[in-house]
Image (tube, rainbow, N blue to C red; front, top):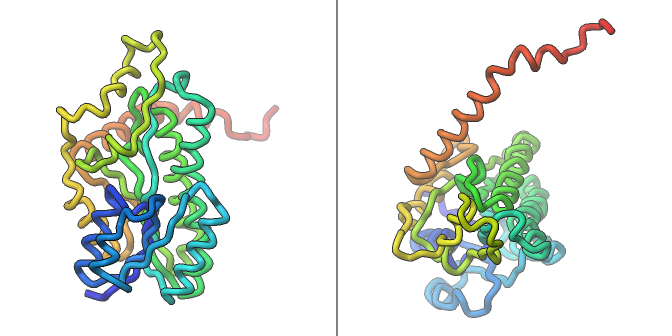
Length: 279
C-alpha cells in the first residue's frame, strides 16, 4: 500500500477524526484543520511530524486559501483533499433566522467550495490528486424540517460533480460521500435546531425537534464508514458517489426512482417546446 498525504478539514470529531486516526495508524501523513485549540493534542503527541495541524474556520475564505497553500508548501505534496468540516441545521425554513441561514451556507457550501478552489492549482501542478467531499444522503433526498441543510448539500454536490468534469483532464478525480445516520457526535455537538414556531407543532417538519434524542441511535458505524471512505481513494476510476449505510441507500434510491417517475411522463411535453421554425 502506497503511503499518501491527506488534507482533511474538521479532524477533531466525526468522520474527520476517525479517518485521521486510521490513516495515521497505517502510516500515512495527515494535514488536519480544527477550530478549537488542543482538540487533537493526543494525536499530535502520538504521531509527531506525520500529523500537521492548523487552526481554520472554513468561513474565513482568505484563511482557507492561506492554510491550503501552507499545507502544500510545507508537506511538498497532498494526494487527497477531504472536505469534512460542517454542521447540521434543522427546522422549517420559516423557523430559521437570517443569521442561521447565512452561517449554514457559509460553512457547508461556500467553505467547501473555497477549499477545493484553493487546492486545485496545487493538484494540477503536481499532476493529479483526489478530492473527497463528505456530503449526506440528504444531498440527493430530502426530509421535512431540513430545507437549509439540504440546500447546502445539494449545492455542494452540484459543485463537486461539475468541477470533476472540469479537472478530469488534469488527472484530478472527485468522490461525493453520502452517508446515512452514524454514531458520531454530529447529532449532539454539531447540530443546531431552530426555535420552534407553534404553527409547525403537528406537522412533519416538527419531527426534527427530536433529532438529539439519544434513545434512537443511528445505524451507521463511523469507524467502518471512515474505512470505506479511505478505501475509495484506491479505486480507479474514482466513484463519483459513495453511499454508506443501508438507510442512505434506501433514501437515495427511493428519491431517484421517484424523481424519474415524475419526469419520464413529461417527455412529450418537454419536446413540445422545441423550436420547429414555425411561428
